[in-house]
Image (cartoon, rainbow, N blue to C red; front, side):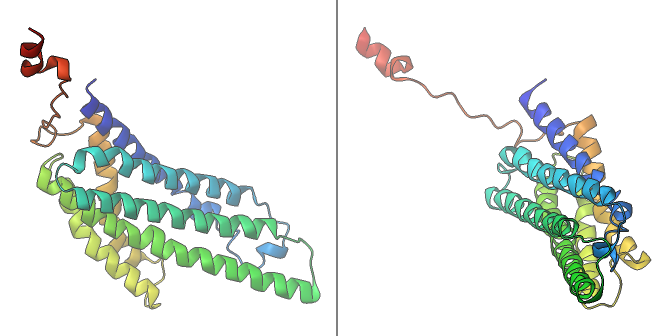
Length: 243
């Protein structure tokens, strides 16, 4: 297996791994309730959700780091920007996970009176923080990722142009969803939001599948090779000197 094919395979697998967080919508259903922090409900689902999100954050960084040596040949500034947005997205995911882990750690089942009131307020604040960083990290940052990587892949022809085109079309749609959610026009989990964010999900999933199964298409930037560095003894002038 060539190094280019291996790079595509690793990047594709990383992209597919980022979809393991889908179950968190169900796993977090209990932890986001107002009374969770003073209830005796199991926290196992929340902890599994946190673990899955950590995996997603690391896999997201992996996609950018793996693809960078290839897409930088198309445009190094945009490739570096993609690494930066992916890393920032992961940092926000980790911040959200830390807030939920704090929520679990502060639980006092059976608390009552003033303690219950203050704990409930703290719990609501931690959940609100998680929702805020989710909106910016896992909703807004994918827009930037799609614009940067989508442009690089569309121009380079490393994958069929339909795939990055889906991302480039989906980016403004998801940005609209972020703005509408931010101003409380729609809920983050509403049907309208789901329709607007669907193209980005299709773009990332189709990219992951294509890179895993097919690899990069033949492209001038994959054919670019760095000539070997000649040592002093290997140069024609050096050989002439020794003779």
